[in-house]
Image (cartoon, rainbow, N blue to C red; front, top):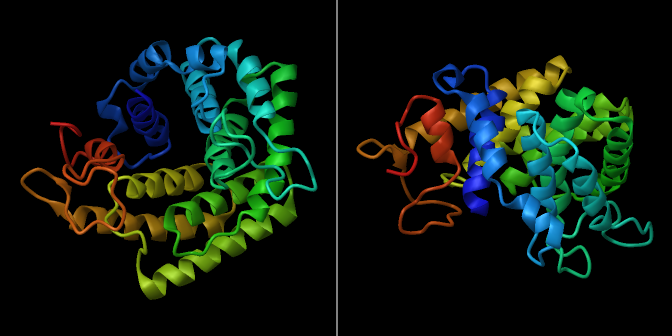
Amino acid sequence: MKCRLFSAIVLCVGILAAVPLRAQDYDLAAIVKSQAERSSVWSRVQVLAPNMTSRELFSYALLLCEAQLDLDRLDRLFEVAARMQDRDPESRGYGNFRWNWRDGAVLDYNAGDFCMESATVIWIKHRELLNDAQQEALRELIDYAIHGCLRHRVPSSYTNIAIMNAHNLVLIGEMLGRDDVLAEGRKRLDDFCAYTASNGIHEYCSPTYAGVDLMCLHRLHTYCVTPAVREQCEALLKVFWTDAIANCFAPSFRLGGAHSRDYDYLGGRGILDNWLVAAGCSTNPYP
């Protein structure tokens, strides 16, 4: 269920930001509303399920905003997220989030970036839907998360997180008027572009992470207001889309091997399949 929910969010919410794709062929509003109504996240939040993730709190919050449904639930989602955030300035995980509710501390430092990936879109696109208390709670979460994102330095070879981290810092810097955060985000994006220009896509042919890469790049291109960053996104999108299409196996239009990272070793399926459907390259991501 979690994988299906996340795939649906990627397909609906992520592709809403991807103007060149064939989003007009889908009733995205109906799909988003259906997924919001069917989601199991809310029941997990109510009981604080041990394997509930901080990431799904924000992805579900974004889904509710896109559907404009049950917005009163945002209070609880942000409250639980705050309880999962490390707010001790002396801690290595300061500003970051525990990945699972059951974790005693921040163990996976990617959590903060996965959370802010959705939080930035909520703030930029849907802030007017939030009441004053919800805006204050989300702003506080983001303010703390800035520390976590700045501290989370990954090599440019860690393709999906390098893109996501730069995406978060650039958008947060712009939307909150934090020039220092924006400058750092741009530097990290510059470093990633230089590395990829020389070495190619390090996480090559990944059914899962190619989809994450496209989602972050399309979102950054859509919501960023810095012209130079938008130009970089356009160039990177050409590279990543070309790589995805060129490596697809034509009869099934599935990403061919070898895969750098793959969670479905036999089937080779992942988030990228949804993007191929949206681009009109395939009719069914799970035939």
